[in-house]
Amino acid sequence: MRLTTQTDFGLRTLMFLTHLKRRATIAEVAGLYGVSINHIAKVVNLLARHHLVRSIRGVGGGIELAKPADRISVGEVIRIFEGNMHLLECVGTENVCSIESFCKLKSTLAEAERIQLEYLNTVTLADVAPTSKQFARSTPNLP
Image 1 (cartoon, rainbow, N blue to C red):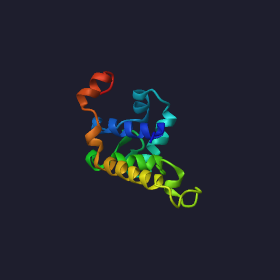
Image 2: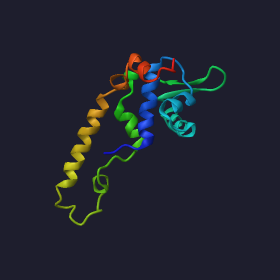
Image 3: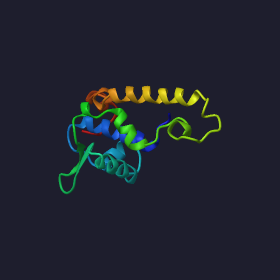
Image 4: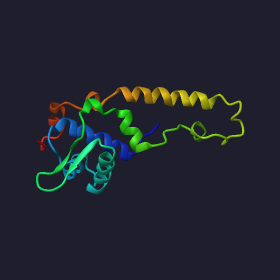
């Protein structure tokens, strides 16, 4: 499985918010990772629709985690952004292959997907987020 850039920045945005302990702006996140504000805005919009990020408008507004980092699994975030994570089309669809009735590859790949997602569901943002000290070393201009 290879994750999309949008998933990557969704996870990175959440990791940054885990570290920050305050509201951040989309511009801060975009500046940190060197990507466009529009790209991060789309990522944050999806995170907010799934209640992982709270977006507050106006003066003093910004974005923040909507729930504690230890209650957000990496698997959940990946599913939100990736949707269909099947390794091959046949894993999630019936009658797409002429050898499906005797093929053992489909069940093997389905089991691999299940194990991978099961593991990713046990890992939380709190488990993967860098420490404040690590962020401070790599981003000296951020509070």
